[in-house]
Image 1 (cartoon, rainbow, N blue to C red):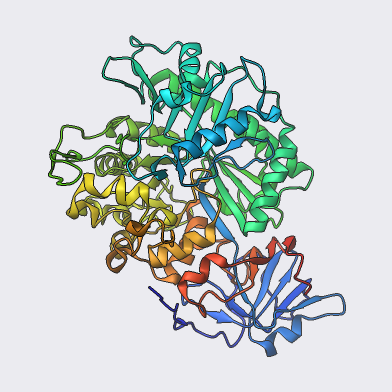
Image 2: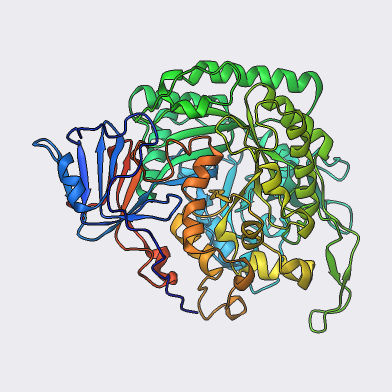
Length: 631
């Protein structure tokens, strides 16, 4: 299906926009450090305005408008970039990402469709590679296995496939979702997992017909194996952080909120900031297994200690601090990126929808096939998934975090977990004295609870997101026909629930403020494909996979290109409490922007994924420039 992304009814800006914040143009314009002109500058302001010129001074946008107006900002030292008609847009903001450091070699299956022979052949190659160890006690950790793409369709494996490899080494193969892993018998033995091992809280150990572990470990059961592994030789953490920044800058990501992070990760990025090497605005949510009582109090104290040690008042825009108790006063914009310890996430309310795992918590059971593969007969089964934490406990957690000025992001995928999470945030709102009553929580001072994924939402809960001011952080790229959706979810939900799967359209229609989160490395780091998927809800898998042709409920659930871009820029900035400073190209905001090689509004939507970032600017500084771009 070819859809030309239409030129939207953007308002052409004839002059400068109104001043929004500190640093905007004065009555007599000062010469800019940088001027961009003769372009198509998509501002993501309230009117979807398009301008042709923009000026930057001291990292702040001082002018957005037409060609004639920008001349007043050009001085003898101003760098003028002739865009030659190219598109400029705000920098991408990722409100849900993991693993933002880079540098360690890994045995990587690279998300590819694989047969069992290809799967084992790749692992054999890693076993033969000394970079991944060679001793009989050296663990082989295999990453990015797209288990639902095993060929032929319907193939399932257990530890026996790994046990047949010619090795005594322990092996663990992690799926791309991070919710399951397959271990060989040696790994299970070293982890102390046998037929009598109970399921840990928040996880499942799968068994065969004889009651023995079959190698599959779901969610927190994976930690049993992780705990058995010896510590790996450490990378230089600051260098790993720097390499991660290079990858994000090339992708066009200018702000991110990292999930499930640790004190050590925050420390590494704080050190990188001290060396003026941070090239994206870094927000961190810290991992916690704490749920209630003294354990929860101790964790909140630890959050305070991390924030006090590594987050510095003078390095962040004032808005980031605005809703926190005893926050510093006075307006402030800081062009250079800083480190912000935002709160807690992702708190796991349930697991995933995909078969065979099916740990996402549903209101009604998953369906089961009571017939045959040739003549299926789908009926309700007994499994409704796993609600790892009840709504009352989630609400207590979110409320206690908010009391100390911490944000909470909760992972909720099934409709029962989504409802539990909304109930929890309703408890937060009832106790939330930091936000204006019945205000919709729009002001900077309001706490902004986040729900990641929300893949299945009951119709009765659609409007509650807007009513409670809950931001759904969605991964657009999941909304496409693929093994993990068409095969592993669709038949188990049935047509009515399937029509609401990946409900960006339903939530947008109900007034929710949708933000984007890549969930990398669950998926490849490809924000441009994600935007394309939000608009088309399809993917080209080629002739080898005809069952994945067409779209995934596009008529009801697709977003407009404007909405998809807003979610990955301004709305994601809102999720990080920085939408008054970033997320759109308006006077008084920080100059976090991208120059692209093509105009997203002038190309077929299926070409959006081919977009290249020619230049990335953060706070007025160029942090990435393509080799073939010489402005």
